[in-house]
Image 1 (cartoon, rainbow, N blue to C red):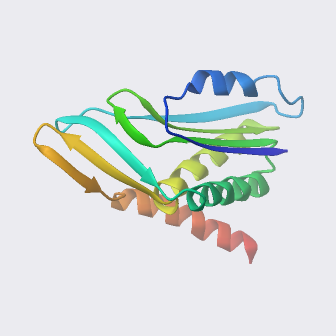
Image 2 (cartoon, helix red, strand yellow):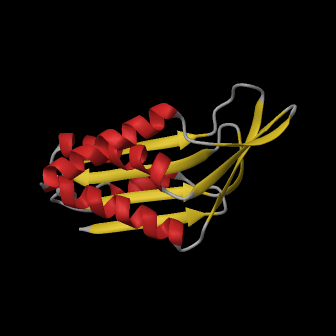
Amino acid sequence: MSIQVRILPEAMDPAASLAELCGRDSEAGAISSFIGQVRSGDDLIALELEHYPGVTEAALEGIAQAAMQRWSLTEARIIHRVGRMEVGEPIVLVAAAAPHRRAALAAVEFMIDVLKTQAPFWKKEYTRTGSHWIEPRDEDHAAAEGWLRSTQDQAV
């Protein structure tokens, strides 16, 4: 069982990271992943992410550890970009390896939903008319709260 958390200031290769997981552990019958990328819209040109080194990694490690325990994963992986990214560039890779598909799929959904609101990243959007800081959306908070509430219910 292992956890890999990385914060990258340079471009990432999600396909290479996923390829590393394939065949790595004979106990894992399923590997599930989510790749987030900078989307266009609202005249978006670029996105910039800042973070608090050390604190961000610890938060991501905690999220991955919670997923490992809840779904008995063989591996959890969170790789996140920081710095400026253009439309189409990958921002985040979340992956889980587990004995069965349902666990891997649920763990990935949990990690990305909780990461969106609980990890200390600050996002700035650059558009044709200027730039502005953005906050997680209400639906992001609702998704994270649903997972966190169900995690607390399991602990009781």
